[in-house]
Image (cartoon, rainbow, N blue to C red; front, top):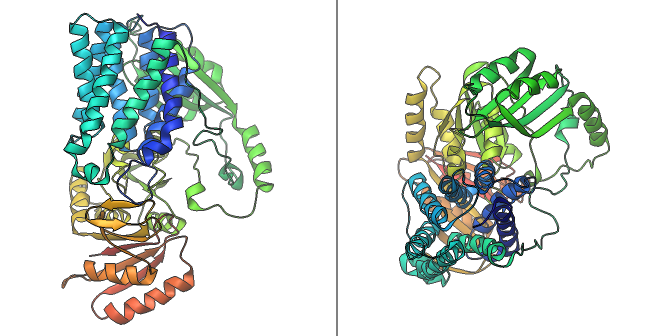
Length: 556
């Protein structure tokens, strides 16, 4: 049997193993667009849990599994990170309240994890991490039924996962053509192997990374750039491990906190209540919360002192503005003051300004190579002063993370499945303030079906993808997410892509240029497009300032 400290060390070891193998996993991505996808997202997701688990000692395996599950849910990034969090959420249910991990609850944990992940994916694709996890669970079950102990059950799961991983190219033609296995499946095995190092040898794999993701020094101190009106002095945060015998509801705690402060956020699940409040009396908040259960992760900060220090830091910070990819946000929870609000995920000051002009309340910096976590999006939702909040992910790899905010938020959350920036713009234009939220959700989603999106970026790696021989560094033209062609001349690539996109009934063309395109370059291209297509459609150029994509095109 494995106790809580052993399980804690095993998950920390898994997080470190992922960090060490992140680039190798990222390199398995067959899509040649620069995308910090699978390895990076899984690594950042597990790292969020490792930071929480390092605070635990001497608790049961069940408690470790629950803390891990909660931290992964909030830290999940990208589809691969969300699926990983769901696998561990099911794992936590399998361990339950047990003091130890046993062969029996381990086999159950694998099975419940797979069940949770498959249920969450709208159209499960075999040949991915789902297949690898499912076969691992099947092998774990067989080993338990054969009378094996917990180490043998876990070892059987790893062997099953490896067998399934080798078969992924037979299930997904794109993998076979590229001569690689599935990146998510590989990441899952790296997690299991990191855990096994502790289970079998008692050795925590050490991280090779000098600086963890998300901990780089920011060149911008937004908190110090603006004068703030601070009503209450102390920002108070903590988690309540719920006492199920107390008979109290989280809504009671929220009601009390609203009498002693503002910016109250109370988010709960079956096991915990997460609390944030600004108050002049943090002791009163703590005393009341103790009647709901035990407190952990307590943090009290003097916001007036923080603001003065932030102002000083901002005055001494570099004047050079950072690129949009380096920006970070600080979201402060607010009380709803209107019925409907909007959160949009995007990168680039120009694109962010466009969404704000269309009525978006809160912007989350993110997109390709920088998928925000569930918690990033959740904090943006809580910082939006509305009872119902629409989220526009604007990237297919952010949709699942956005959907995980629905049960966590104090607001009603509606996720519109926008996969590109033009689709997000179209959804905002389709919003009707006189219609109800359900009708708007349908119409906003429908509006995305009539938008054709083109993107011009560069190939991050050599690839034989979807019938195209692609060389690293070539310009890559994408049409509705699929590779259209490669090119070496930027203007030619845009003109050629636009020719593919325009139809007889096309009326509007919008071209958004990125941070690596000068105003002079954009003006020259605009002149070419106006001469060739200006009589057929209305042409609009926007300085989006986005990273990764030189140009984003929209035709409708």
